[in-house]
Length: 393
Image (tube, rainbow, N blue to C red):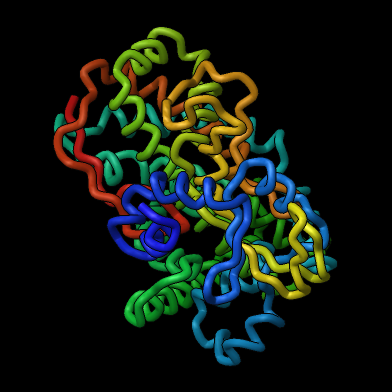
């Protein structure tokens, strides 16, 4: 595979199904290089880690969208993401993230362990002998957990799956008109739901994240509150769902490692970190240079757009020996799967905790757990995961 075909393959279904051979070619070509459309691609772990923390880089925000897509607010799926902290820059990002972090605390996340355990155990007990793991476990567990945090009633939780899945297409660089239409519908329905929940929690606060963020002292505007609640729901389930599905496929492909984790659940944190490195739920993130910046001896002009290939960075042989081997005994695993710097994923501790609880329970409660058919991947470049994962036990 030559350089041009490797880059082009990332924008084709077959290449997205297994992008790692293409990443190897691109990384060997250069740590950073420009593409025909003027975008720069970053391929190595060291450079990706540095640029994720570079304060002069920013994300595309509402002002940028106004310039290249004046009507973007009419698509409420797009608006939900662009108006959230995911697509904010300082000073607004600093203010909004501080408010969210003050409510989404480490103590609150740690306090969810019993909830996660109980929900996971219930799902495992109810799992049919032959099932689609994504439908039976990987979707409902994260949805149940994030909805419990947000204060969404249990009876409403199944309603969120298709809406959240439809909305996340706005994070992809390539989408169809129909996918964008569905994202708009999902955004409108999610906004309507959270408008009602916010009003209810402002009248009668509860011990949940929505009540904390909706409190008068949070400092968020109405639009910010709404957009970030939608973001927390969507991001809180989508990436964790992908981690659960991909992680299970990995351990079932490595039965000797599955046996180790089954016999010693204390290995779960190391296993989860290696899963994140080996096949990241998020493969790409973007940044823009606010000023001219010299990187690797290359002068990036102000306004330069960068695509940071997180999946390529996580399998960089200069950082990890034998990077295409799944090895939870690696020392110093530092995947860039959750980003870095000011935009480091606020929900990373929760995603890690869910996976650390789930995998030992799955393997111990279902000792005969095995694949029961060919998995089906979602055709996505940014958010990598399975649409179906047949299992038996």
